[in-house]
Image (tube, rainbow, N blue to C red; front, side, top):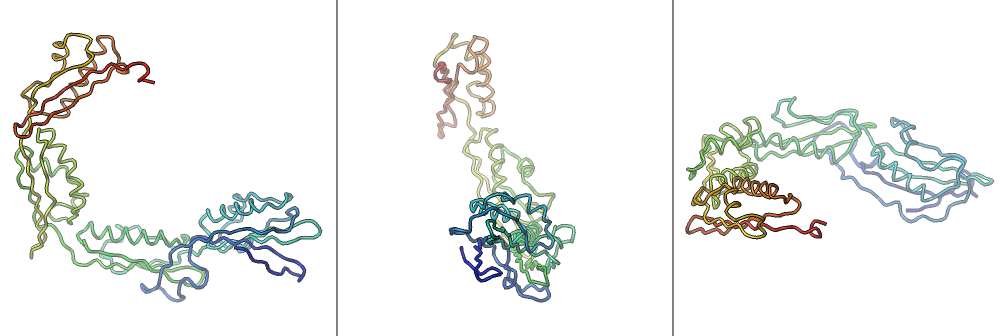
Length: 378
């Protein structure tokens, strides 16, 4: 964006390079007045600096900063590349504008280049500071004061940070059983500052009255409950709030338990919840399926000793419950055997493949020993 305006004298011209930072406008963005929860919170905007037109040539005689109130001049000058005594460089001015905006304490920045006869120019950065938070009001919250870390008065007002604070406040309510809680952020100008309001609508509180797990036999309910993240008893347990997605995520660790018991086709249904007069009743149904055993074990490929020696080293035996971790330990034992036979880890690869027979409840295992050539290693 480029405009030209008269300088102190009609014959002087100045070139103005604008850059807009991420903050509320200095005058019209927020209504004036005392804080309430009815004000509007503007979304941050950013405007490109735009194409630059020719400016007066010359050496920079001074670099001035205008508009500073609370931000230190030293902070701004620490990011400037343009200096007195150097020829004016518009690319450098552009970089300075970007660097100043990156400090995230200004809502508007512009550079003015004015002729300074006979052969110099003045470089002036006009800065509009972001307002500070003058106060914070939280309305509708049912949480103790110490639970929520609210924005503080005296901080630079950042719309996105205020929105995130409202989201955190809603989440804290949901973790305590207010599963329909919403929170909105509003802000208003008040003098040179901004007063923030976080408006909470918690809704009804719904806590778990009962939590049942059905269909499990090989894995106990206590083992499964130990893997539920309750956040200190606040969620997914009797007396806590119901968080279905968290419970579904916890079921990944449940599946590891089933796999360690040979229940490779186990299925955990999505949790069901029913609201009754005494609270939520949560139920999780499980289908464990058959318990798989290890069937035929075949060791093939580039063997450096008799197959019987490999079979003796691989300790999971046919007929045992198929446990993935135990198979992995057996593969590690084969690598140890290879080292005894003079072939290191980088010279051999052992590839296990399985053949699952669901109707029979068995898994045949093939271990292929592959010698790795020097070119493959590279």
